[in-house]
Amino acid sequence: MSGRDAGAASDGRLALGLLAAATAALFVASLVTGPAGLGAWQGLRALMLGPDGGDAAAALVMRELRLPRAILGLAVGATLGISGAALQGYLRNPLAEPGLIGASAGASLGAVLTIHTGLAAAFALALPLAGLAGALVAVAAVTALAGAARPSGGGALTLILAGVAVTSMMGALTSLALNLAPNPFAAVEIAFWMLGSLADRSMLHVQLALPFMALGWALLATLGRGLDALTLGEDAAASMGVNLARLRLTAVLGVAAGVGAATAVTGAIGFVGLVAPHLMRPLVGARPGRLMPAAALAGAALVLAADVAVRLIAPDRDLKLGVVTALVGAPFFLWLVWRARERLT
Image (cartoon, helix red, strand yellow):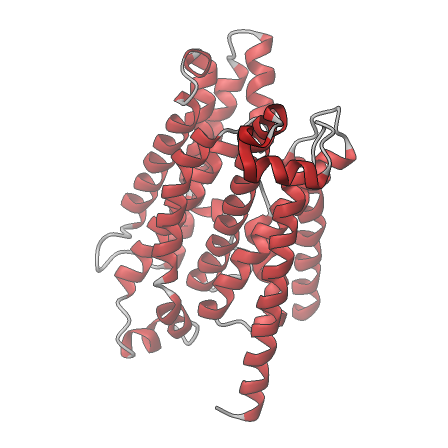
């Protein structure tokens, strides 16, 4: 390894260490932030000791409300970050983001249908379960259209086109369900859910979504070498022994499992998967194998920070998490477009 490469690796490890520390601090901040009026030490003590510590009300707030919210913020942010980095690496497109293959749109449609039909009110877990089912249907459709499961299937362009088509269809059906909502209350509930939030989530939501998100992380973690080789082009990657069909299918399934589960329990949280890889690329380099873990940490930090901001900015107005991430991510996206245009002119 050259001195320059060693220096870059050392800087990357330092950046990861600092980011991990920041993410841990934001996780703790998420635990101690909220409208219950608990002090930081009081809340953490109640979380560690439980009802036996003498403050049953504080233990209930910490264990049933704040802890699931913090865990989901960490897991959902990590999922969006690593998925965005993996898709940008596979498609070799810095503007790719996790919703590109239809998982988010499918999960949103499944969840919206349970609200539309009243199943969400009758069965608490109907909404996340239907969201997971919708994500699976959407990704199955994208996989079939793009031929991602076949060795001779289409490449990145075919996957993008299939994802855009399925996402557009799922979005149109979601809009139709909103348009035909049986009453104004259902329409408002659908609209609010689509904005994305971590509020009022329980450990049941964590237990339902976390295994699927962990499966997505495990699948995407195996892609580092293949994605690094793919940066040289498909022909070069194939000559290095990379199975492109397996790489494509693993990327699709990993993103689908993680993003589908995340969207099913939190609603749509946009721009995190786009922004996190770009924030980390100058620090750890453009190699996807090195970028994915860094983007996962950055995504977790972004979602946790945004969720803490939601509770501090407007604690009485139920400001939605997806609104905050969009307010941050949209200007960043415009800056990326402007920078790309400047390079072309």
